[in-house]
Image (cartoon, rainbow, N blue to C red; front, top):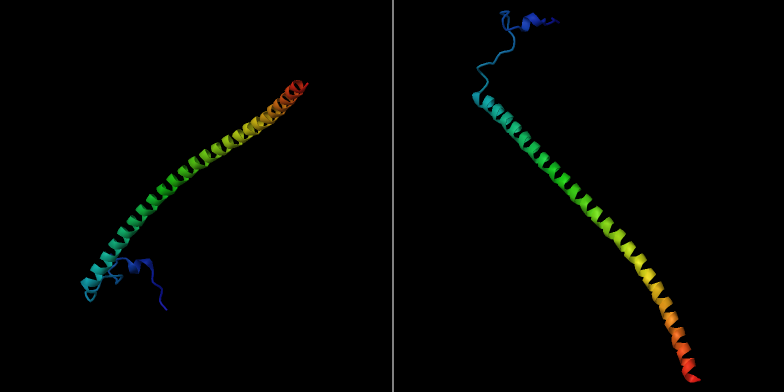
Amino acid sequence: MTEITPEENCPFSGKPGWHLDKRVPLTLIAAIVIQTAALVWYAAKLDGRVIALAERVELVEVTNRRQYDRINKDYTASLTTANRLAKVEGLLESINGQVTSIVTHIMKQNSK
């Protein structure tokens, strides 16, 4: 087995290296060039889609954060409202008890 040294593959050494044979059809070369161009175009288009989707995901995340903050704010406000309502209910029960005792007292006064 013979070893191939780098000098043997050099196009300037005068020894046979890689070359394009005339038997390779021009249509094959054209097909390879067209496929390569199509692959580059497809990759560029795919990259554009990925960038557009990344932007949409970022926009959705920002929108979701805003909605979460608004829901959290509304929830906090509803808790505050519930606490206030409980206080009002307590005050109304107290007032109702006082009015009942006043009415009872007036009824006793009138019955005498």
